[in-house]
Image (cartoon, rainbow, N blue to C red; front, side):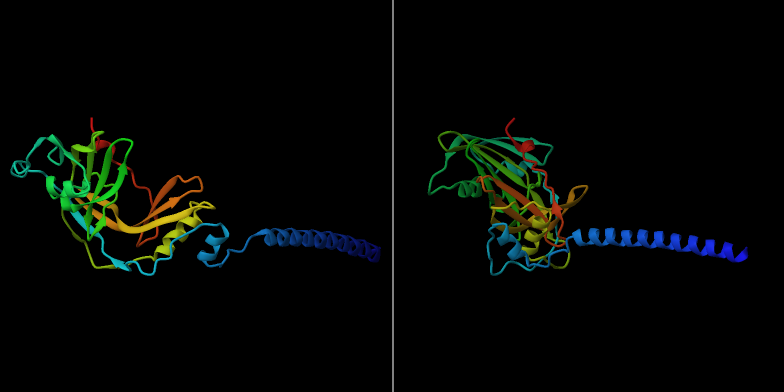
Length: 270
């Protein structure tokens, strides 16, 4: 009787283990198949990956490798400064923004370019660099410079110039920062190709596009009361296959993509 029960027990164990083995084998196969579908991250150089997507990019031999963070203060215009400006009717807003209308418009010519007229007729006009011309709206945006590089889209470091249909400058809106200087020791910068790689890995560089321009400037990192700190930033201009353009900003120290508000509307003509 005991022998019979033991035979039945052995049979049950054999059946259970057989089922268990089938289950485990099935689980192994499923995991193996799932693992085989996982794509191993490609270690193909970024240049080759761009070429495969027909993304053109400039091959620049040398760009700056080190730069410092920069700090500056919001400038408050004084009556003494305003008295130096001739041929202008001036309104001051909050002490930090000028709205100036030329009593006699200034013609833009080959001899008197937009930049030269700004240099000669605007307070600290040589502190700005041309960023963009809007032919449709007869205006130009200039950004303040530091270390010969532009400060991108900071509303306290911007100049917007307006002209009429006769190409005569009629008005400008101005803000400016004081005491722009290096904030700390120089930092090692990410190579410009690393900035392109960051954009590519996020899917922001589309197939058949062209990286038209890469330049180093500064973007706002922090603002404490009237003092602001700026980080070295790669600006990447991309032309799409339909000839439209997109622009991106990448922190040149940390490699983060930066969303910069295009805060120019507050300086526009009201």
